[in-house]
Length: 341
Image 1: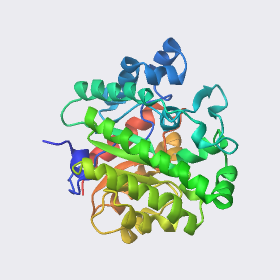
Image 2: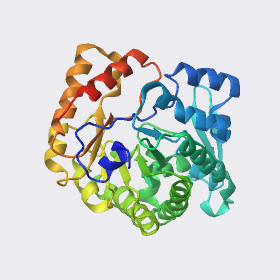
Image 3: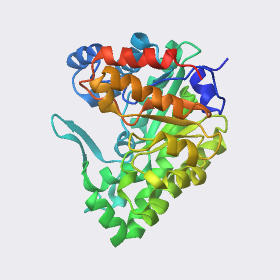
Image 4: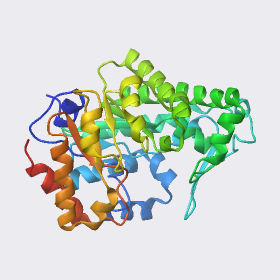
């Protein structure tokens, strides 16, 4: 029997609400901090398959979440496409050479950089109970391209948005290349044991409606169609963070099986405007989880109540913060576990 998370992503409205949290395997956990101190930097952890599997499993052991999401990073795809990837303390990830001043054709792909990720998935799936869902993921093309072009994250994605307007043919070639590698990457995760996958489009909110259609909806639709052609039974969650009023079009046009919503979306609006019966994932503010208290209780229940009449996976509006108290996560877990439709 599939676990409650997988069942919900397939469109069934379970009595109990499944729960997992974006970035649930990470810095807020003391056991993660201990292992990272022992093993070294972030990329070293990702490529140590035993360590990456252990980190993926840590929040399952501690909290019993319904899904285990792979411990990795969205920038593994450009790393496999031939860019160099570094995680610098206090600065975040850096990719070189930047494609704003270097041609895509100058990169030499290194597909073997994906193989350890698949091995991590295999190791985690072998350890997971059958009622827990193994979640794989990748970055969506627009968000991945913003890092490939600029070489790092930015507040407004200025360099990438400018390139998309100035030279849409060259930028489109980057998007197409990311689509191709991402399809293979997700299928590799699925073939290693992932039972559902999520597409993270963290910077989708930076685009105008026309550019959103071109660089968010169309590429995610292409990935979804290609993955579904090979693995039609695998649910795909799309998470276009910051998309606001463009979210219903994304839900209708990409073909994803479920939509993740961020904390800026009114859950009542989402329940009304999204396609009937489409599973929704989200959308508690991570800062509310950081704060805890009565407000956490009230707002978590408000999210649960808003989606009482459709399949819903409880999650945050984005990743859990590194300073979030363990007690607050336990408080949230109790709220969600004790709620019944």
